[in-house]
Image (spheres, chains in turn cyan, red):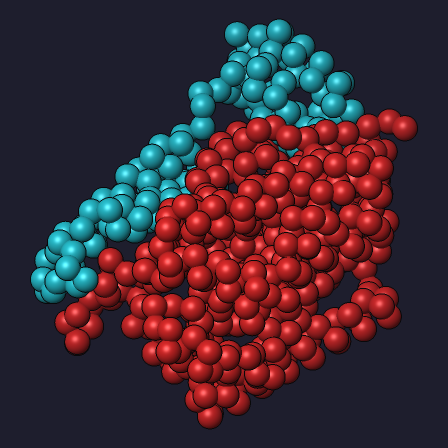
Length: 141
Length: 433
């Protein structure tokens, strides 16, 4: 089903779910994100957030490991400061937390939303500004 | 007008900017590209002849190049403020500015990243700054603020570039649909085959939220780290705890001015009045005014700290800053950054776009001079009175030329951006129609 307007689309989607079509079988394509879709078709929250957590954690650990282990590998006192000087190392760990966190979130997004998709890059099929509902075949509840 | 017509009009209006360029555009591109090439040639000249062609005189061994580095990193900040911080605050007017501001961030960082290399003299040994296992068996000194800079600015550039690209994916899919031939293929590849399915949007929104959250602390941290390049030294005028917040406010101030400088002509050229309204400019002008007040407060506090410290070198430096060799720059800076922006308290002037453009240009000048004044006046008034008046630093034509080249490169990249990529975020605009 293809709709030009947002309201008709949301209405049709609501009716479809009301008629007992299981949400797993419904796929929608929209030109911009609609909060209504999430309300009508409840899905669990995006797992992209776990990629963010793992990436950020890896970054923090890498930052401290890199600074502490490299300074210990050649213990050279600079400016009278301790070999393992935590305050400056926090800055490095902080930067790497953000760097790794962002990159891993981005990779997680690509992975979970199946991008880049060669098939869709080559596909000529476009819905443009229209709102689309696709229902897979199967039993209604 | 119905919604579908509005959506189609938004596509049309914004992608129209990507059509065949006019004469004024080509002229602008020609001028900026020549400046950039000129700057590059002067850099080549400097590499051939050594840093002596810059005006460095002991003890002033940081000058225009480092000024440019700080200035351009600062310019980048406001882009992140607008795209990430205002996103988290759900500020609606962000939609009109976020794409140009993000582009500005990425380009400003590209320019900024060149200056430490230019300043090195022997630019080809820059890789000494990067930590990797070498045959010298010695790692970089992680206690040095210059290494913090490498990490802070490197992270900032990478995250900003990812953020810029991610925001563009749905719009590249629109460009793919509306273009033909080789361009269609390019946009199709760049859009990664984005379709806008429910699942994609769900992950996309989560990604965008996280990228905004990761980028937000960078607004405060990157320029703080840059300020510590100075504050970690013992030089009068540099060694102060207010430097981090002072630099961050200055960064947002100058960046906001640059956003106005870029967006006012862009709105006029591409007739985007429907998407960037005077109300939006007024909101941005308020950020400009607020940060101007913070920066002015920091100027006053700096003098207060010097006076209250009772340290004769601090006191002398600040006397010198206001009344010494570089006093003209100091007072232009005060006029541009502290006095002229005060007129934005008047709503009539905030909403007067030509006036706002003039103020933003003056702020750009003022903020460039601020960094120059901080760097050069402090260095020329250090703890060795013998050196105070022996040699006065003056920028040479090489330094001035490379600075102009940097501006040329920045505006050239921006001009290329407006013709090749969707210059406003179309899907977000549709969301709010």
